[in-house]
Length: 97
Image (cartoon, rainbow, N blue to C red; front, top):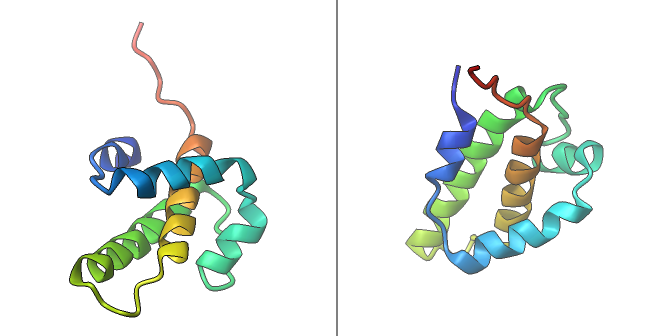
């Protein structure tokens, strides 16, 4: 199983981009936002949504770094908001006693 927490903790993005995403988490609505970001689909569990969101975020980051005119800052922030929010919905890891 993929460790999404580690993967996202290692994510290196501009500070302002991540700050905007953290601020937007408060308004995140899974049923509304995932459908829009994932082309009409709303996976039942965060474990199913996260890989798709990670792929989309990586595509957006590549487009940003290339300076491509098709880059959408708004979409990038929305995908990062969804990533952070879905991460919060994951079951907490079992702590060893």
